[in-house]
Length: 247
View 1 (cartoon, one colour):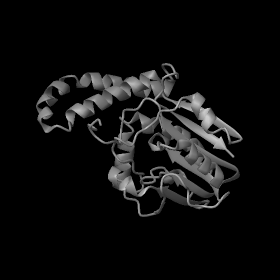
View 2: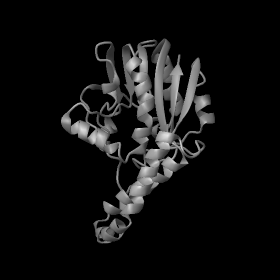
View 3: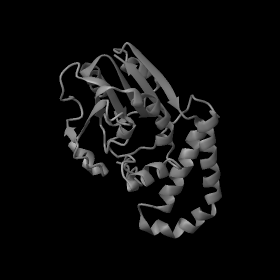
View 4: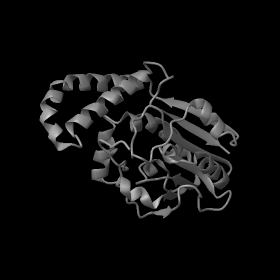
């Protein structure tokens, strides 16, 4: 089993001052979150009624919902605490069987979860089951992402596989997140963080060498932001995908 150099930083919403600093600060270097946010912003504010957040973690995108028009329900596995998630405002589930009746929810959120689910089709079918006819769901999955939360990281999905996975829905729109240029920027950032904050403390003696190359990290970070802004690069090798479904 591979040893994880560093776990992803837990994603929290901007509901407090500290949370806002952490959330918006990470957007400077976390292209996975940054690339997903426009898609979430385009969908979540329009949700009405009961909304289910599958594998919600700390509910980082709940703030995008209209509080006066929605009733939020997050669900997650008990083991989420291993990933530094401790959300008391949720219903626990076993990662497969969603503990609600058929046709319960008017909207659904599931961000960066399916790669950690061994029986992913079962969970997707459960999402379909609990949504009301005509309801909308938004799901994000990574494509170019490092092996993370080891060993609970199982899959990467192509657009072809996603179309099959969500074929029960009346529509499934798949959008790419970022381009190969964004991926390069993301990989360089991860490489620098891994070496500046190494799991093996003796590697800290190499930190000055990595600092010498910090202009490279700054340049690729800038190019990553520009690729998201202007769509530079090819979408055949993106950071990930967003799937917008309708039952």
